[in-house]
Image 1 (cartoon, rainbow, N blue to C red):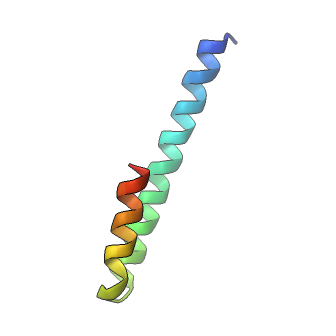
Image 2: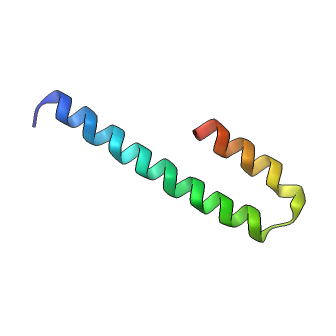
Length: 48
């Protein structure tokens, strides 16, 4: 595995992780009170 391959692999893992976290947060936002939603949305924006 070259250095470039490792970088690609890591960035791929990170994007998958971020997507998974985003899905989780959106589910939490839907299930929780409306007051919590703006905070979770700002977290998702920061990650994205």
